[in-house]
Length: 388
Image (cartoon, rainbow, N blue to C red; front, side, top):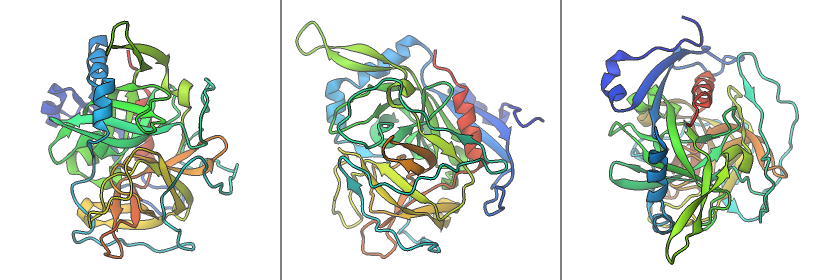
């Protein structure tokens, strides 16, 4: 079978019947340095179609009315069910001075050394970042690609963080797998929307209804957090404008996601010890009940990455970063070679779950799946999806 071959997985016919498609694509087995081995040779993809007609898009858009979005600010952020403090310990080997690990926010991002040498390693494709074609005013130099996602799993509403990613279809979002699918329940998210640049309830660049969720099957079938990422295709965006009568609103189109906010690049198989910026909207309490963040503003952490294992989550090749993020930051991007002037870099991970490594009942570290060739395969498959 060729590297681009696709096949239906007939043993999961029940998922196919419910709108979930499972396909398979073969990828390379390791990076050039051999420091990270693929956990499986075949990369199986779970793809969930959320909208098939314009009526579906309208139904989801109308569900997230201005009043509902205001109410949803108080919803619970989606967080992994298993807590690292329940028996698992972070296994990390510092490769540089320990980062501060303090979440920051506001109108400026501290600059880091920006290298223009980003050539692809053997077997490691590189997707270049894209700047927005529409120049819109911004009150900060935080990346406008980053925002919040709102969705339902079953009857419960949740939210997470996410980022636009450069793609040929101009409509692609990266987030955590558990912000698109609950492997414990075997349920995909629904009523999924993305709001880039979200700031205290504002939707400056529009609202984008999800078209399809695309994840690695090791996450959807096994709950393996080495694959806790999802690439979601979205429709053209819209903003709510006041209607002709009191207390009514109408949708006003704003165009494609990438035109409005640009898209982060993508790199895989880059090793550890990299300087990285992690962005997100933390809000959930610490283990001790303290709540340092409210999820209304984008915050960031920066530092060097470390190797991490978490057996309770099946994480064998994870990476982590000193950071005090709590739940709500899940799905936010980890960017390497980040240029704060342009607000773009290269996606190399996503916020997955938080750690309390010193057992003081406050989170002090976050982790991400290590992006490998399989990650790119899921990205590439998602990029081929086209919203009608």
